[in-house]
Image (cartoon, rainbow, N blue to C red):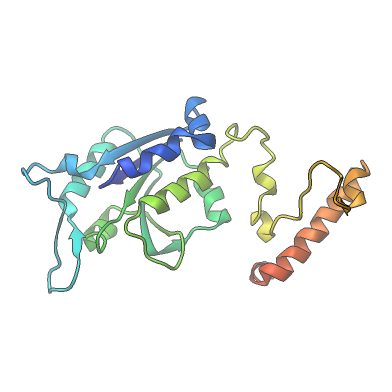
Length: 227
């Protein structure tokens, strides 16, 4: 997978891709991530990428011309499956959407800033709009990082155990069941006997039951979505 991220502050994005799972996915050649500073696509001396709103109003708006130049230049080099805009009024990111995005080959992510982008960008260039929640950030960069992390870990070969991602919370609309590790007893607190029994059908049944109970208690809305 190749991910091209268009941003006003590329330095804000770099370090998360230099550590842990995202760094290893790049080192393995499973993912390419490229950052594009929008100011590089402006010819004036001020490198201006924002301007006042038509009709008045507080806050600056990202201009269409530099965004057009950047996206057009990228599209001349390859075909993209999606051009994504990170915005509070987009489709809310969930595990199902992350699963779908992990199947893509090439994507562009545009990080909004200030009051957002000229509406014509959304009308003519963007194919998908994604939100990470019902709140507003200073820019789309942190949202883009969350999207990348959620998607990259699902790509085959990224995680050490390829079945790990399939048992995460929200797969099949269930939260993950309780998990334990050694020691089997600590300060009198014992691991459920079924997990040390070696009876894997019973273990799987226990995990399914606990996942359902945990979801019903913490996120009953997920069970409603299944009905």
